[in-house]
Image (cartoon, rainbow, N blue to C red; front, side):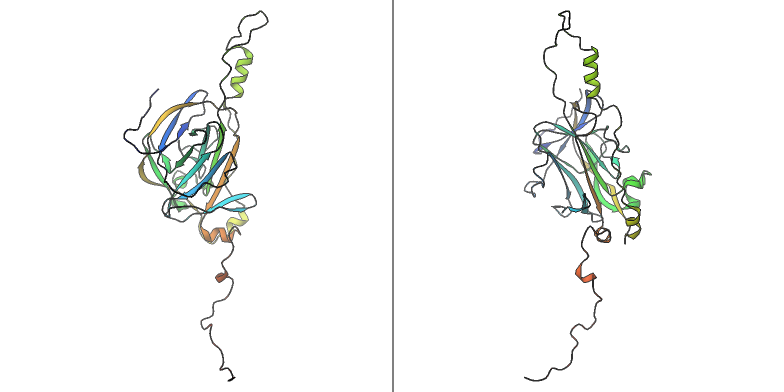
Length: 291
């Protein structure tokens, strides 16, 4: 199996990419994590996802409305998706931005390639994967400049998704005997059925990234998407991963937009200065009587 081994590197954390076929190869990205950054939120969850503003150097605050999570995206700022696995086993995180798989560039489906993360490990995904060595940085930008729009898929801009699959545990080292006392064959009907159930061959429906049309008409500014940015080094190698189930164990969605649009949608409170009519002479008054 072809692999890429980093040499003379101080990068502390490794991430791996996965394909959907049974016992198939996947890509492993070696990603540098910034030391001393704010701890991941929601530590009690098996998998946590945060959006890190690389330009500002901080994890973006998350706002919730009607069960949906939102972050404020600033056009021109680069960002990364940080995923942490709190589970005791490896996972594969199929990651999409604007409805596009960040590894393959295909219209996203949970059956596609993703990042394999060790138990207790984490990964920072900073861009669209171009090869086993390079990525193109994510950055917030106008809808027309987004990668999705430039590839004629603008309908789902403004959403980041992560579909999580746990790794299938190895089968027992022995084979039970059949009625005649002979060891059961690996290709026996029961064995084939178990393998089929553990292989995600069929596409799984995913949640749409589009918001209500009525809200969309009220937005004060054009929506934003994610651009295809500067070229960066991100080394990779191939690994093997077998999914335990055909459907994701968990799906995480984070939506993003300009601050003014999130205010118009009611996700963020309207600033106080916008709730009153400005007065050009706020200190105008008449002469007070002497005491």
